[in-house]
Image (spheres, rainbow, N blue to C red):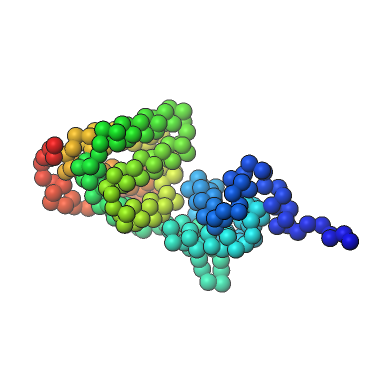
Amino acid sequence: MPSGPPGPAARARREVPDDHPIALLQAHTLPALVQRELTRLILAGQLTAGSKLNEIEVAQRLGVSRGPVREAFRALEESGLVRLEKNRGVFVREVTPAEADEIFELRALLDEFAGRRAAERATPADIAALTSAVDGMAAAADAGDADLYFDLNLAFHDRIVALAGNAKLASLYRRLVNELALVRRAAFDRAGTLPRSILEHRAIVATIASGDADAAGRRLREHVLASRDRVRRARGAPQAPRPTAPDHARRPSRSAR
């Protein structure tokens, strides 16, 4: 007895290529895979801030049922990338200029701590990995690939946070970075931004390699605030005043090694 034409969800699953990462692994941790794909689309700017995410459409697009999508939405809310509004739906987060300034200032404090710890703990292999990461960023900049540069930039800072050896820091840091990613992409498209950013990253590696915890912390903090200023320029906003540096950041650098 004919079963009738397949429904939209079945058609969507059939249309997912065999080599699609979700098609390959759809029997394993589907919510995590859906979350990863939606995160990629949001951070790449393909799902824009303020846009509504339809559960059915996402399920059809990725060839999965609605359950994993629903779970992924909840995880994305916890990571700071979407907001769930009762009776309205799920929306990609919009970060206001004032909120972005607050996040940058908090991230500057966390980066300062991470930089200090990294300078105290980094091995020659760690320094080589950071140097290689900046070289990759430079190559992406030369190729005019702002998307790749953005991804490598995130990975560079993740590595420094990992060197701090603090799991709570890493968790809080990742949420802040996710939120800032919603507003930072435009800054990377401005002329002259990437060369200045590369110089800042090379200076960060140099101070971490020197073992000077004070200098490394200060360098990371200044870099984050410079990123904030670049975002404000990209948005056409006036420069925000720099927060007063902590006492130890104003003291002369003292080599820790």
